[in-house]
Amino acid sequence: MVNFLGDSSEVNANMEEKESVIKTHFEKFITFIRDHWKLISIGGVIILLLMISVFLITFFAVRGSYESGVHFGVREILIMHVSSLHNDSLDNGNDDYLEFPTTTVKTAKPSSTTTLKSLTNPVFTTTSGKIGKIHVTFLCIAPLTCTNNFTMVNGKCWMLINNSSIRSDADKMCKTYNGATLVSIRNADENQALTDFLKDENINTLWTGLYCFGETNITACIWDIQAGSAANYSSFKVGYPDADYGRCVFYIGNGTDIGQWENEECGETMPFVCELPPTVHEGTCDFLYNSHCYFRIDMMKNITDSQHFCLSRCSNLVSIHSANENRFIQSIYDTNFTNIAIGGFASSKDYMIWMDGSPTDYNNIQFSYAGSCVIMAAGTTDTGYWYTRPCNETFWFVCDRPAGFSC
Ligand SMILES: *[C@@H]1O[C@H](CO)[C@@H](O)[C@H](O)[C@H]1NC(C)=O
Ligand SMILES: *[C@@H]1O[C@H](CO)[C@@H](O)[C@H](O)[C@H]1NC(C)=O
Ligand SMILES: *[C@@H]1O[C@H](CO)[C@@H](O)[C@H](O)[C@H]1NC(C)=O
Ligand SMILES: *[C@@H]1O[C@H](CO)[C@@H](O)[C@H](O)[C@H]1NC(C)=O
Ligand SMILES: *[C@@H]1O[C@H](CO)[C@@H](O)[C@H](O)[C@H]1NC(C)=O
Ligand SMILES: *[C@@H]1O[C@H](CO)[C@@H](O)[C@H](O)[C@H]1NC(C)=O
Ligand SMILES: *[C@@H]1O[C@H](CO)[C@@H](O)[C@H](O)[C@H]1NC(C)=O
Ligand SMILES: *[C@@H]1O[C@H](CO)[C@@H](O)[C@H](O)[C@H]1NC(C)=O
Ligand SMILES: *[C@@H]1O[C@H](CO)[C@@H](O)[C@H](O)[C@H]1NC(C)=O
Ligand SMILES: *[C@@H]1O[C@H](CO)[C@@H](O)[C@H](O)[C@H]1NC(C)=O
Image 1 (cartoon, rainbow, N blue to C red):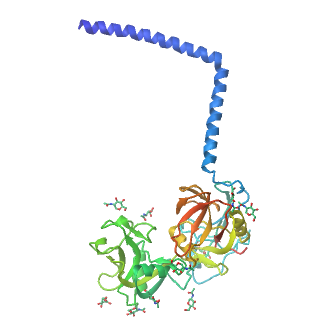
Image 2: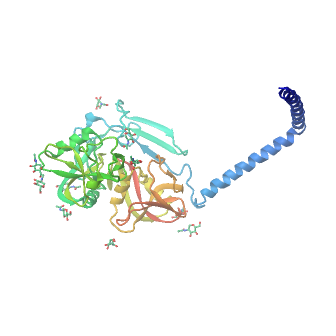
């Protein structure tokens, strides 16, 4: 007890002592600041400058691969980003395109998002792009069609190939049609549409683009290998998916289980349906895919000259936004070991931007060698992967613009 009280008064005394010590320290501190504020602020400024220069040095070291010869001036590259909306009422075989009031541009890419559908007149807006470039957005109305003699079914383009093939051959054969994939089924409407499409075709089973990497795990069943899982929608028969039966998935086209899916060994043979996205029609494109117009240019040029060449055709060096589009680009080359320039800049394997200002929503860079220009291994024996090279090297290239322009 006594001890305790004694201790507590000692503590109080200590506290008072400490408080006064703190007070005098604080006063000294204030006085110091008052006397030396000029020196202190000069020191602060110097530290700030040091930090900024360290940041800048790091920044430029990271992008060291930007060659001094490249001047992608903000104004050197015209960004033409075009999107549009699709008016169903025009989708009646009428191939006329609406003309913009202010430009010679005729039609543009139908947006997959139809949030702007309620607009009935073409809209013309200009906004500034991400990296300070001109960024023009056109909105208009255009009918969608299918290329390669595919049939429009429920907003997709399909073609039945009634030739029993193993899954890998089926996939390769589809690819020869502008990089088409095996059929993908993303919702109940599409599943029903496939049943209707196969009516009268006397097809019992057919390969789909679904491949299961896991045993019975539906999130491991992936469309076109890279185009999303079947977790959101599937029509598996009870007891499936089960990769024990095989990793490839087929569709049942007749009988009581019609419209359901099962796993099967990929070496089995069956007919298949190939799929392409529908597109705005344009006759003058070398290649037409998903409402974009592509030009394959077999000339060796460095990146600056390539982009200038593309601009002279109202286009940009190609930007690639999905594994399926990448597959399409690869499908337009029929030679081994073809390396082509695409319109990407990469300061590292994981950081890339597109020259046309479009979002980086797909990145297939596997190797970052020297340089920051993105090259695609597009030969028939390659897998379409990307890597980087110095921008003063010369490559073949592909230009791309929204379909429906006349320049
Ligand atoms: C489509 O265009 C027609 C005129 O061509 C218009 O009457 C109709 O309302 C439009 N529909 C939509 C959904 O915008
Ligand atoms: C479409 O079919 C017609 C007739 O069968 C054929 O002549 C034409 O070459 C085909 N077009 C394509 C792009 O396959
Ligand atoms: C059917 O597929 C086989 C390979 O599976 C191929 O050799 C053959 O040419 C194809 N036939 C037709 C008519 O496409
Ligand atoms: C597809 O091939 C099967 C078997 O070869 C045949 O029975 C069927 O009639 C064919 N269907 C079409 C539409 O050609
Ligand atoms: C299913 O597969 C996904 C993707 O492959 C994985 O993230 C998840 O952990 C798996 N779930 C189970 C229960 O195995
Ligand atoms: C499932 O659907 C949602 C919303 O439509 C989408 O954001 C998501 O990416 C889809 N997931 C897969 C695996 O496709
Ligand atoms: C469905 O396919 C099976 C197997 O080929 C066949 O025996 C059966 O007759 C077909 N059923 C219908 C309704 O076509
Ligand atoms: C391309 O590669 C394939 C397979 O490696 C080979 O058979 C073919 O001869 C090559 N073609 C050329 C033109 O080099
Ligand atoms: C590309 O080549 C042109 C000459 O054709 C040259 O003027 C330009 O500096 C080169 N650019 C790069 C980045 O090497
Ligand atoms: C690219 O530039 C580097 C140095 O800037 C030079 O060593 C190299 O020879 C150039 N390559 C070409 C193809 O011009």
